[in-house]
Image 1 (cartoon, helix red, strand yellow):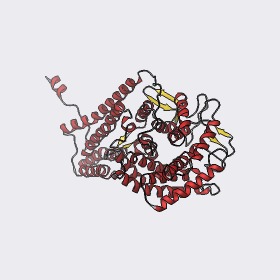
Image 2 (cartoon, rainbow, N blue to C red):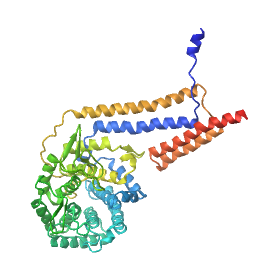
Image 3 (cartoon, rainbow, N blue to C red):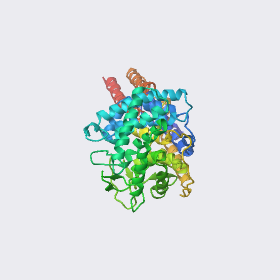
Image 4 (spheres, rainbow, N blue to C red):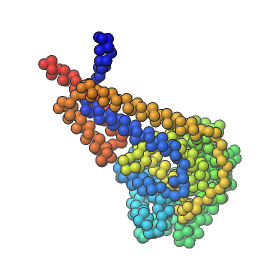
Length: 495
C-alpha cells in the first residue's frame, strides 16, 4: 500500500510565475506563426499567383515596405551595400509600377501609385545626393550611370501611369536626352558606373527608360538600346557564350560573366533588347541553373572558376549566389519561364526564413534586411511596363531533377511538427505546475506580468518589435522573475 501511495504521489515541479506562463504561450504561438505558414507555402508555392497576375496581398506588401522605408532601415542597408539606400527606394518604386500597370487606367491603385512615385522619385534623388555618388563629379551623367538610370526609369513609370507634375516630366525629357547623347558618344554602348569602370548591367535601367520615352513621346532614343545590344552580342565570353560582367571604356574585358549581372540584365532586357534576351536566357537556363531537389538556384560564377564573395554576390553556397538567385527570380518571370520561376520561389521560401506581420505582409530573414524584401517583391512582380500580361514566353524544355519535391515536403513537415511539439512541452509543464499549486502569484510576479503584457502589446499593436526581439525580451524578464523571486521570497520568509 505504501509503495502504491508513493508511486501515485505527483512529481515535484519547479515554481513558475504568471510571466513564465505568458512566455511559454508566446513561444508556442510564435512557432505556430512561423512554421505553419512556412510549411503551407512550401507545399503550395507555384508562382501562378504572381505569374498570371498580381495577388490581392500585393497592396499589403507595398504598404509594409513603405512604412519600413520611412524608418532607419535604408540607412542600415547602406552600411551593407554601397548603393543599399538607393536600391531600397528605387526597386520599391519599380514594384509600385509593376503592380499598378496591370490595373485599369483611372483606378484607385493607379492614382495611389502616381502619388507614391512622386515621393519615391524625390527620395531616390535625395539618396543619390547623400551617398557616395556626388564624389564622381567628372562623370556624365553626374554621379555615374546608377543613380541617373534608376531615377529616370522611375520617372518613366510615373509618366506611363498618367503622372502630370511638370517638373518630373521636364526632368524625364532632360535626363533622357542627356543619356541618349552620352550613350551615342561611347564606343561600347555603356556608360561608366565609377571613373574608368564600366558594368554594362548598370545601364539596363537607363536603356529601358529611353525605350519607354520613345513609346510615350515618339522619340528615337532606342538607337542607344540597339547599340548596346549589338556590342554585347559581338563581345560574348568565348568559353560560356554569355555576356561579360565588366569592361573598360575602350571595350577591354575585365571580368567574365557573373550570375548576379546576368540575372539583373535578363530581368530588364525583354523590354529594350528582346532578341539578345531570348538567346542569352536560353544559355543562362542551361549553364547557370543549379537544381537541388525541388528548388533551383543560380550560379555566381561559371563552373571551374574560383568563388569570391563580395557585396554584389552576397553569400555564395556550393556555387549558388544569393544575389544571382534573387535576381534570377526576376529573370525567369520576365522571360516567361514559368517552371523555373516556381522552383526559384520554392527555394526562396525554403532558405530565406519567411515570417509574417500581423497585417499579413511577408518578410524574409525575420524582417531584418529591408533590401531583401524589396528585391524579392520586385522580382515576383517584374514585367515589361507597357506590355503588362503580354510578356514574351517561349517553350522551355522541362527541368528534370527526379522526385525531390516530396523530400522537401517531408523534411519541412517533420521540422514543423517537431518544432510545434517542442513548443508544446514547456506549455504542458506550465499547466502542470499550476495544477500542483507551484505558481507564484504575489505582488512582484503580477508587476512583472504587467511588464511582459506591455511588451506584447507594443509588438502586436504598434509593430515596434519583431517576434524574435519580443521573445528575447520576454525571456530575459522571465529569467529574472523565475530565478530571483523565489530567492527573495525565501529570504523574507527566513527573516
